[in-house]
Amino acid sequence: MFPSPPRGAPSWGVATLAPGTFVHTSPFTEKLSADPGSSNLTAVISTSDPDRAGDVIVPHGLSTSEEYLRNPVVLWAHNRTLPPIGSCLRLDVEPDRIVAVTKFAEGHPFAEDLFRLYEQGILRGWSIGFLPLSAQRLPEPGPNGRRGLRIDEWELLEYSAVPIPTNPGALTIAIQKGLVHDTDLRDWLGLVPDDLFADLVA
Image (cartoon, one colour):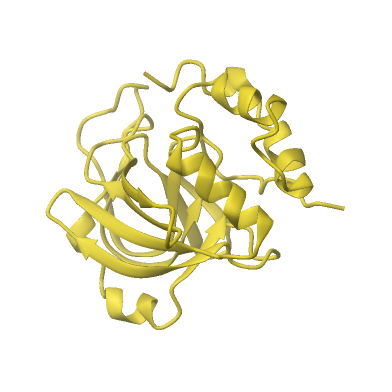
């Protein structure tokens, strides 16, 4: 049976995924370029902008990218029971964002379908899995009235493609039109309710 999406993974913000492991999904991730010939995708995977939960991940707080790049796995929805969907070829830590070049696995229908969905802009979400090394509460409450976290130092464990569509209806249309060939991915995406994202996308 295909595994369900992990519980505890947030639409946005910092949340605990497993003991000692945290995830952060930013609403400001975006595709920068896609190369169908190589299945390489360049995208912003995290930014310094406060997310909808009021949390901030400081990009230059990444303790070392070299450690991560020794085993640069890219996962689907932080699910470690599935094979990686690709690997990170390059990680650029900029003052206000982190840009990654992801090589999607070729000859793997699940990963190939995901690449096409990102290439076409139907999916855009990315989420980092990390260990916080230094954090503090922000002095002012965020949009939801909660004082968010500021993660000043952290270690990257992995980053994941996550099922947050740019357009809430685009994912359903892509499935209905048969753009998603892999049955496991189709079943997984079918579990994503459109209304969960209706007020989260522009």
